[in-house]
Image 1 (cartoon, rainbow, N blue to C red):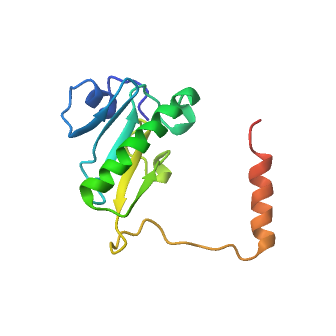
Image 2 (cartoon, rainbow, N blue to C red):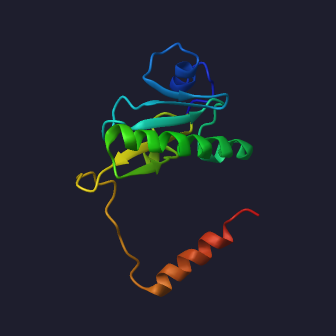
Length: 142
């Protein structure tokens, strides 16, 4: 995991040291096209302030992420003629995070596309689901 912003790919993109296809920037956030997109228009949104995962983000800065998503996602949909979009965010390598600078994927979707992000599962019964809910609730830090 990168904690040194000098070694962080996305920090270097924000500094202009590495080129990108920038789509939006303000005081707090930076957005650019993903170089390995699920679909054309797949955009990455980052906070300029470095954090490794969403668990490290300054909670006061999340409002800037939401405001940027509300600006960028409609523009992505318009540009790609999409009927919807995903906002995805991966944390830690086990969840598919490959760049350890917190980022959000804005991915355009169409009703007829074949993109599949995951297969849905099911709990074996309501008791199993309830037990999992209780364990998660007990582990939430107040």
